[in-house]
Image: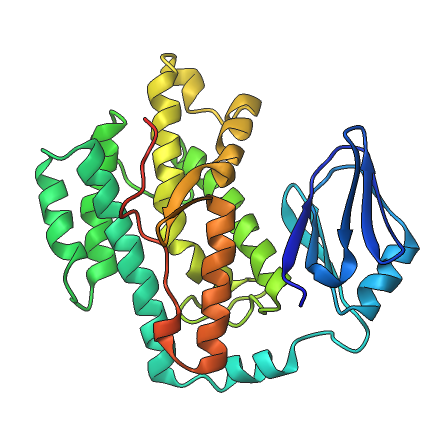
Length: 306
């Protein structure tokens, strides 16, 4: 059964298929993997050469080939007879409203719990941390917005910016957060495409032209991972003026967040591996029409560096 999502990120590599084997040749040598064990291929390399033989074999075996630019999917190559997973698409379209709402509530609960856990670990004595903890454990209608209000107060004081206001166009530290969230969004999109979920069918975020609401939905619990890494960056750079710039050093630093180890279901796993696992759970929940199959990641039992 095909199950591997293969990520191709080596510089100047060549990809082909021969004798039933996916073959990658790069400066690091040759790597082989049975093509029948591959579910999808993610090409994030900046200079990969893809042989037509691989394209044909991917089509025969129903394998998605996802081409990325700056880690964000820009092209999706699918077999002619499987431009989409019909059964999965039908399940998404026919998903009951209550199930959709429960799936979104699980995302919100996980996000708020992670925000509270991060605040508790980095600033346990802040009065806003106590408020955040109370709201994150509740079931209030405006839970997400209330938690965000207390959380960003704590965040601002942690990074030495009292009165911090989180906003996409507010500049300064917001620019660091925006870039980190873009990296996170790219990873979520990669995994959605890889397992056959159409990111244009969301469970909460508003549908807009060229938007990917499902990716916005499923990335919510992971946002505090980016926040924590931004905090680390600001703490280890004494020059404040330089630290708040989205420099080349910062881009390399924040991009590495996807490889950070976190704990999921009792096992250490990279953040991108965890995104894949929770996305698979979400797919199962969609096909089964049961939100209980979806288990978003939470910070419980995980360790933050810094």
